[in-house]
Amino acid sequence: LADTPRNANDQSQFTVGIRHTLAYTDRAEYALHGEFSSLRTRGAAEGDPTNTQTEIFLGVDLAF
Image (tube, rainbow, N blue to C red):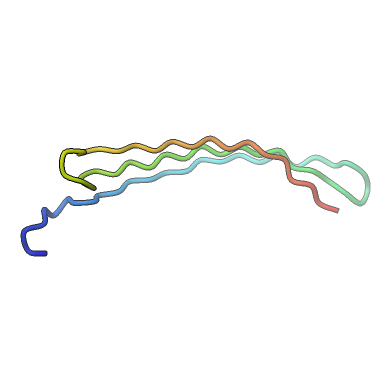
C-alpha cells in the first residue's frame, strides 16, 4: 500500500549454535548441542512498535 511506512514489519534475526560429538562405541556416537536465537520485529502492528522473541534450545543427538 502506498501509505504504508517503509520500515513496516522490519525484522532482524540471529542464531548462534555449538555442537560437540562424542564416541559412544565403535559403531555409535552422540552429540550435545545448544542454540540461541533472537528475532526482533518492528512496526508489525500499530501501537506495538517492537516485538522480541528469544529461544534457547539444548539437545542430544544419537547416531548408530
